[in-house]
Amino acid sequence: MSDSRPSVFESLRATDAIRGVLITAIVGVVGYFAVRPAPESGQGGFALTRYGWLMLLIGVALQLVIIFGRPLMVRFERARDMEGQISPIVIYVLQLLADGVTVLLFALAVFGGLSRVESSL
Image 1 (spheres, rainbow, N blue to C red):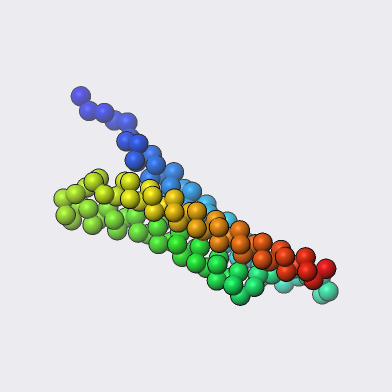
Image 2: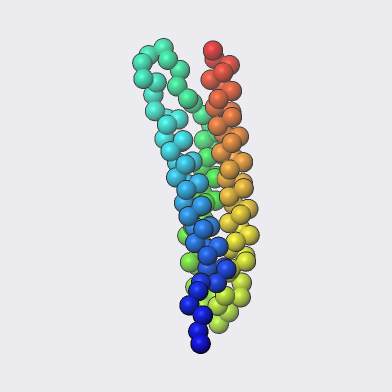
C-alpha cells in the first residue's frame, strides 16, 4: 500500500518557491516604481539612493540563486544516489535565511528612500 500524500518536505518546497517568487516580484515592482519619474515637474517622487538600489539588487540576486539553485541541488543528489537526504532541510533553511535577508535589505532600502523624501519636504 503506497502513500500518495506528498511528504512534509515536498509541501515546504512548494510554499518556499511561492514565497520566494512573491518576494522577488514585490522587490522588483518597488524597484520599478523607484525609477519612474515624478508625474509633474516639481513633484518629488519616491527615489532610492545608490545603496538602496544595491540592497534591492542583492535581495533579488539572493532570491534568484535560491530559486534556480533548488533544481541544481536535486540534480546533485540524484547524481550521487543521495536523493532526498540533503536537499529538503538544507534548501528549507537556506530559503528562510535568504528570505529574511531579502526582506531586511528591502526594508532598509525603502526606509532610506522614504527618509530621503521626508528630508526634502
